[in-house]
Structure formats: structure tokens, C-alpha cells
Length: 271
Length: 294
Image (cartoon, rainbow over all chains, first blue to last red; front, side, top):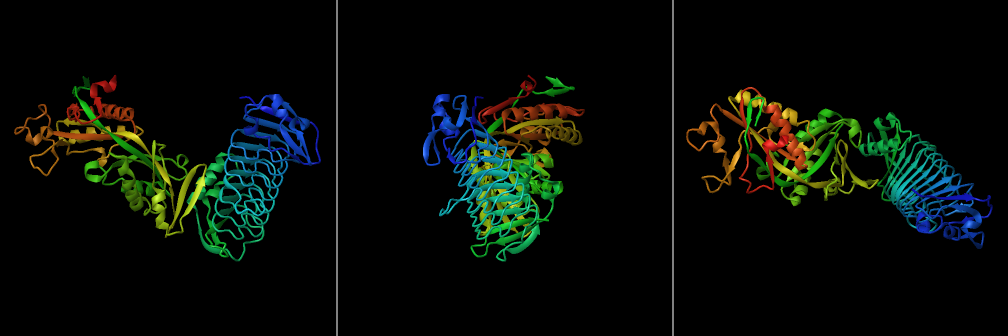
């Protein structure tokens, strides 16, 4: 399978807005055409080739090398293909993506997977704030797809989430799943303070305990083994995540909330 | 043709087009999964009298099921695709949802889909919860024991019903033993079920009756007690006949089950293996016995 290799020529300190780095934009373009795609550097319009050495014609598989922590919007709105990032990457990675897969061998900045509605985003490092969240003033965040972060995540992961799955192998920051509408967040590490604040529906699973308890607007229901969760955890185990037999076989405490809203959300606390 | 001294009659079984679905029923242990499967597929021997034909395909190891618990795979067959949803909503609603610790998952990616969990979810009275993961939507319905989990949609595929063979023996005991051996062997064949009690039917039927209100009646030609009164199909020495009926998800699966079953049934005390048909006038499939070994 052909692929396009992008190598960052030298580190940048001003942000590069590079939403053109996407299989949808690269598809059918020659190497030269890929290099001439427009990007915004600071407040100036430049070409992709000014910052990246391009090897190969535009393909559905893109590999990017270098310290991309100031490169933003990679994979924005993508619907197909795959992007492999060998290093850290900046804000808005995979925002609004609808399909395809992004893999990051480093850390990602805030708003990764913001408003995404499909596809898979897998971060081997940690993620910043607003993972899978909405943009300011918007009523919905993530609407589908799957995000996996092997490290820790910042505050407000999955805020206003409507559908989809967020898996956090490390610890989750405060207000995970705040104002959640539906969907699922599974945290293998410690779940930060005030999880699910204002959530209507949806599921937050705390496998590694609670950092600071739960809000008083979440009410204990029962201890039980949720059958549906077994299907999730077994699938995640198959993907290589460290799910233990205890995660699958032990009881969970179910808390329903947030009763400040309709209260049909739930936080399942392991053990 | 003869197998182990048993005559294989030069005839054929007549099969019919059907629609099939597969449900994976899981539970906290194999006993409850089995109990649930038996109840849900009970009274499902014939589409004419029961609305559907159903049976246990096989037991599932925990690693084979979506939730990692012991399970049972069951197959349902109906004549019309429209009937399937109605039958399954009733049977799963009353047989699976009611059974402690069970869950129900789709086991067939068929060409048609029907809403099953999508219909039963209303039992949750507004507290049911939908979960969508990798394109599969399941419903969590709160029940007194905890939660009943069921997939929203189940697949339905074209299938074959009415595969069969008759075991003609010297005595009831010999015929039953040979037919039991056939059933045991056929249970290892995937994608098929034997819908009758223990996989065996003793009251095979023919089309029509002397009574106008009956569309089918006892298969007089194969009733040993009527040998002297009707045009009997029984050779000398035959005093009992049992039938095995097979439904399957494919023509090949039904044929393989028939082959395996007939081989196992060819035992001491068996005179002949035959098959039931309607002269080829009604069914869309013909399973010629001798061609099973072609």
C-alpha cells in the first residue's frame, strides 16, 4: 500500500494550521501537489512543502515525523485512511473526524478528537484538555467513533459527549464527562474530581478509583456486574489494553446522576 | 446402495425455502444458558403448528461469546421473513428476558435485519439504556435481578427446512437406538438443528386427510400397524419407523447432517433408510440419498 511520508524540516514555534494533512485532501494528488497545499503559519499563508519534506504521492496512508507540537488540526474532518504521527502533536488533532484512523506515538494537545463523529484516534502518550469535547458555545462534543489515550488526559475529557467511546488508560483530569448527553468514558486510572457534572445520560466507568469522590448529585443505586461492560472490556482487552480478569468479574458500584438534570447518567466504580 | 448391510432407498428428501436466525444466549453459567435455550426453543417443532422451528445448534465456550460467559447458540426457522420478528419478540421476551442472568446477542449477519432488542427495550419503561460500540447497538433493560442485555438488531438469512430421513427398523428398541445414534452424530454438524423432541419424530405426516378440516394426517404408508390395511411402503421385517427432520442455514449443511446421520443410523436391526417427499411437487430442494456420498 502506498503512503505519503512527511518529515518536518525544522521545529517551529509559531502555530502551523495544517488541516490539509488528511487522506481526504491528499487523495489523488502528486507529490508536488501535496507540497503546494496551503497552510497558515502564524498569520501568513504558506505551503505545506515549506515546512515538510514530502515523499510520495498523496495516499490514504500518511506518516508524519518530527516534533509537531505546534502543528494544529492534522486530520481535521477526515473520513478515510490512516495517519501515523511519530512524535508529539499540537491542538485539534482529528477534530471533527468522521472516519479513518489516527495513531500518535507521543502526546497530543487540547481538543484532540473534538466533535469527532467516527473513526478511531489512538494516542500512545497523554492528551490535553477537552479531549473529544465541544468547541466553546457548542452544545455537543464527540458524536461517535473511539478515542484511546494510553497516558493521562487533561480536564473536561468527553464534555458534552453525545455518542462514542473514550478510553483513558491513565488518569482523567477533573470534570470528565461534564454535561455528557450519552456515550461512554472508561478510565483505567484514577477518575478526576467532579466527574459527570451536569450529565444527562451516558456512562463513566472508573476502574482505578476516584481522585476526589463524586458530586452529591450522584446517588448510589446498587453493586452489580454490568453484563454490557463485559463486552466492552473484552473487546478492549483484545485491542491490547491492560484489562484484568478482576475488571471483568468484580462488582461495580452504580451511581446515578446528575440529578441536577434528568439524572439518567451513571458512574460505575470498580471494586 | 447399502451401508453396513442397511438398504439406502433410491429416493429423496424434499426441503423448503425458509428464513433462519441465530441467537447467542449467555448466562452466568452453562446450566442457566442451557435452561434458557431449551425454554426459548421449546414447542417449536413445526412451523405449521408452532409458528417456527427452533433448536439448539451447540453450546458455546466463554471465549466464543460476546460477554465472555458460557452460552448456547440457538437457531430459529420460519417460512416467511415477516413471521420471524413476531416469533422472536415473543420467545425472547418470555423465554430469555425472564431467565436469570441471561443476555442475548445476534449470531448471524443475514441479508435481512429485524429489531428485537429495539422492540423489547420498551419493557424498561423509559429507563432502558442504549449502548453503541463498533457499530453494534445493544440495549440494557433494567430488571429486578439487574440488567437484561440484548442486541438491538438480529440478522436473518435464507435457509433450508425439511431435510429428513426415515429409519426403518425391526423393532422400536432397535430403531430408537439407531436414530439416537444418528442424532448424536448430527449434533456435531454446524448450522443445523433437529427441531423435534430429542431430534426425533415418530408421527410423520402425509398431505391431506379423510377429514376436511385437516390438511395433514398420519403417514399411513409408514405406519406398521396399518400394513395390512393400506398401500404400505414398509418392507418385510420392519416394525417401527422414526424420522429425523433437519433445518439448516444452507443446503450444504443440511446435506452434511443427513449424510452423517444416516451413516450413524445404519446399525444392526435397521432394515432400510428412506426419506419423506411430496413427489418433488412442493419443495424447492431435493436431497437424493445416494447423492449424499457423491
